[in-house]
Length: 205
Image (cartoon, rainbow, N blue to C red; front, side, top):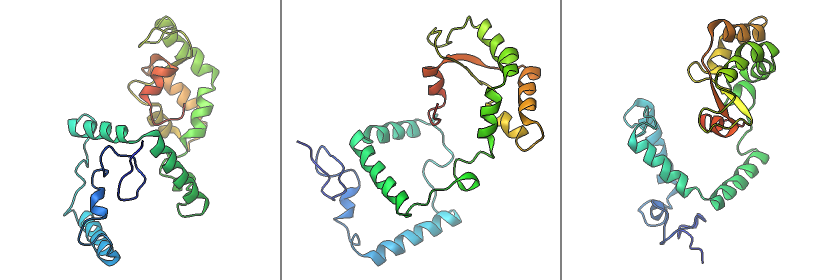
């Protein structure tokens, strides 16, 4: 039988509380909205002037603490929790609580490189003069598993996004990006879909 956190958040637990959630109920100001607001404003001001700093600011997954924290968060993010958050976010998007941002207003905006990327990858010249030689040299096999199905060329040194940014907004950008690959012999490795996706977990392949 599932047990749920006693604070009422709806998360499943082994004991009684999700770590830290006991403070939502048993504390000196947990139900004092004015005190909560004042505390939040104080923290914002401290972050703004540098008095307070996020513990992992500037650190990467190479730091053991960051790696372990990521594993713990991932472990706690069960399918039930994902589904619940998804419903909440969908509702907030539809009722306007969380505005949907597009184009330059989006946090994922990359300067208009997405449309250019699609046109570059559709180039016959890119395939014939850059992709095909790399595929042939690799024996048309994935570097990681040896599969010969659904092969991609992964930019393993200078990333495609970095290259696209150099030519976005310029005249005839597709030709320039393709020529840049060919003339500079941009490094790439052959990976199957599965292993290429591992290199870009945040992208929707």
